[in-house]
Image 1 (cartoon, rainbow, N blue to C red):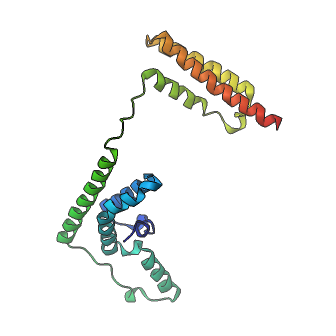
Image 2: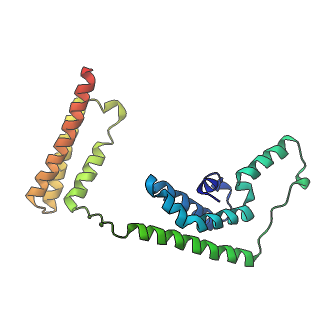
Length: 203
């Protein structure tokens, strides 16, 4: 089986939550992988891909594209429901076996991700003033679409965000240099926005 086979599955029709979660995890990890690293990912995840597909085929065959097509043909030809194949009900032993396979799949995925992170520098934690700056700029980005190009609105927003940042950081007894750094960053971001609007208006 390939990752494309998993992508073709209608996961909303997978009735077993743990199987669905494992399939989604595989697809998300594959999508997050850089193009040049995907071959290595697929090599390490092949066993998990095979197991997930097999589990879905047995537990939720209606989720597979071929079975979906067969169902449509059956409906078009007015086949009676009594002639349709009955869904196989899994025994507790089979479900337990599937549960064990799923655990192994998830372990394999986690091991791959852990191996991928080895040797990579740890992402530095943002400092408090940087977090405050990020939140203030996020608030500024909530301006309605019809006001995004309004220079007066942008100027007023910059003034309010800068003042708010200063007041709250003073309240938290933060360093004056950090306060100025945040205000300078807000000023630069809004100057960039204003320059872009003016340039667009001139064109």
